[in-house]
Image 1: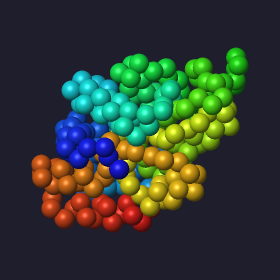
Image 2: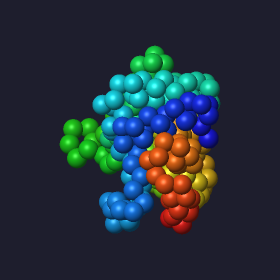
Image 3: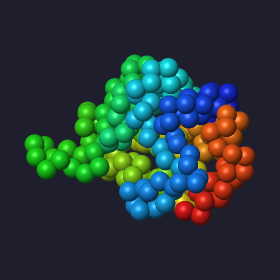
Image 4: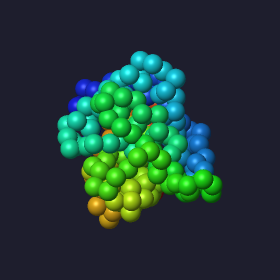
Amino acid sequence: MARDEMKEREIARGLLKIKAVFLRPDEPFTWASGIKSPIYCDNRLVLTAPDVRDLVEKEMAETIKEFYPECEKLMGTATAGIAHAAIAAHILGMPMGYVRSSSKSHGRNNRIEGALNKGDKVVVIEDLFSTGGSSIEAVNALREAGADVLGIVSIFTYSTNKAEKNFKDADVDHRSLCTIGTLIDEAEKENYIKTGEGEEIIRWLKEI
């Protein structure tokens, strides 16, 4: 799924170093949904780490150029994808906008912010894939507005079966700069987790 294995491993090490992805099998986190999880991701931390941010945004731009060469505009998901879409768009010299989780209740009642014309070839920028639900909602909003959504690029993915099914059902192409398998491999190498704990985390994710 990632564009380049060496870059993916470098990104994985960067995310672990700044604790943007945190593995805690012995003391699970509680997600907003109430699910107890051995892994937690906060890619907003990428923005506060210039070296990791530079690596991530450049690889995001290269991924878009390689897999979506017809792309004309980037659209971030609110709120976590907005900054990454803006930086990648700057690197690529492209316009960008973003998709709200719901329409504004005032002004022009926009759901989509930024100029968007029917037929625009768009790539959506997301920070994380868990189940894929919010990403697909953004894609649907853009499709309803007449955009041609080429795909979605995220920084990281939990690689859950539910996400893969949801993306397939919605006919949405998707790419991630770093996958859970690579991240866990690097985490074990760098002693962030004990050998064998990674298999437990992947097994847990496959059951979601």
